[in-house]
Length: 292
Image 1 (cartoon, helix red, strand yellow):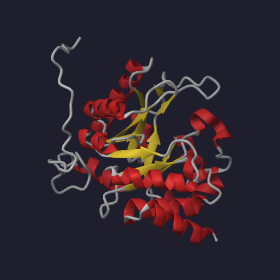
Image 2 (cartoon, rainbow, N blue to C red):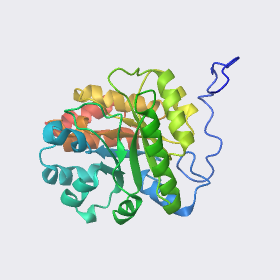
Image 3 (cartoon, rainbow, N blue to C red):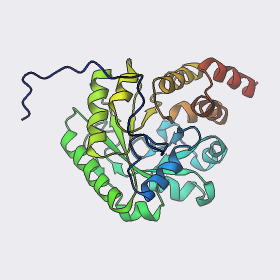
C-alpha cells in the first residue's frame, strides 16, 4: 500500500487563481482533448456561459415510477426549452424523447439493484459503447462509489467506460455516489472527485458541501452539482446559486424540477442562475412572477 508516513495535509487550494491549463477551450481540463471529445463537451456546456443545466430523469432504472416520473412523454416536452442536457437511460430516451429534441445527451450506462434492495454500490455496466454510439450520446454516466463496499467494482466499471470512451471520443461523466452511511463533507468530496477525475472522467457530478470552492479548485475537470432530494423551491434555488458561486459549471436537477408543482417554471429559473448570473432571490422572484 502507499507509504503515508509524513503525508502532508493539503491546505492551500489557491481558489482565487483560475485553472492554469484552460487554453482557448471553454471546458476545464479539456484543452488538449481531441476534436470529437470537444464537440461532445460543447453540446453539454454552453460555449457562451461555459455552464450547463442538466435534467436528470434516470431515476426510473432503480426507482421505477415511484420517483414521481409517472409520464415521461408528458413531462419532457414542456422542459426541453429550458435545459441543455437530458440525463437518462437508453430505454427512456428511445421511448419518450423525440430525436429532434436538439439537446445534449448524458446516457446512463451503469445499472444495479432496485430501491427494494437499496444497495446500489454493486452496479454493472449495462450499456456497451456501440449502443452509446448509436444513441449519439454526448457523454456516458457511471455511478462511482468511493469508500463503499462496491468501490473496487465501481471503479472497474468507470475505467472500462472511460477506456471505451477514449477509443470513440465520447466523454465520461463520473457520478460520485453517496450512500446513506457515507459522509458528505468537503474532505470526502475532495477525495472522491479527485479520484474519479484522475481515472480519466471528463466531467464529475457530485453534491454541494461546505468549502465547495476548495473541492472545485482541487478537481481538474468541471463539476456539475446534483440537485439531490426534493427541497422547497426557494431552497433549491439557493442550492443552485451557492453551487455556481462556489465554482460549479452547472446543475443536474431531477426531483427539484420534476417533483415541483411548476416544473417548467422551475427549470427556467435554474437556467437563469446557471447562464445569466441571477441570484437565488432574483430567481425566486421570477418563479413567483411566472406562476402567478
